[in-house]
Image (cartoon, rainbow, N blue to C red; front, side, top):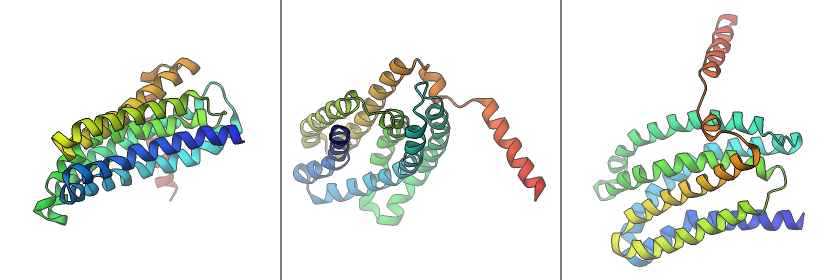
Length: 222
């Protein structure tokens, strides 16, 4: 338990630094006004990440109880999450233009910053679900190592770029970091399980057909 808990703590600590340190760095180098605008964009990004976080929490005990080396169930859930998050991110892209209307013209750049982060949000959402296969089957040391590497790169990029380019650089750094941890975990997952990455994340037509058929049956049953 202590070994598992130590590896899990490293992953959580590194992710916390990645999600939070950028705001402190923006505040330090660019001032409270820039930090306030960036805080709005980052808070909305966290709201989007909550949905896959809930999915991951529900998936973890099922993966732990199954101990399936093929990771078939985790793959199915990840594939469905990719479709859901694609819709969520597209909707968020449109709604982001309302931020200046809600918070005022001074927060206009929050729209740009959120749009910059959306690709990373999409991929970190998939990572948070897919990684439950490893979290529920012993958490190999490579997973916290991936997070530590990503944290170091994120901090280096923020300290190098935020003083020059401001909050938009922090948004770019966050998106790049989210994509990086996704690539590392997805590649490791593909190597360990033999799954084709395209089949893991691409929704399948027959699944939508089955879903619509179930909805129709329920509608007619009522």
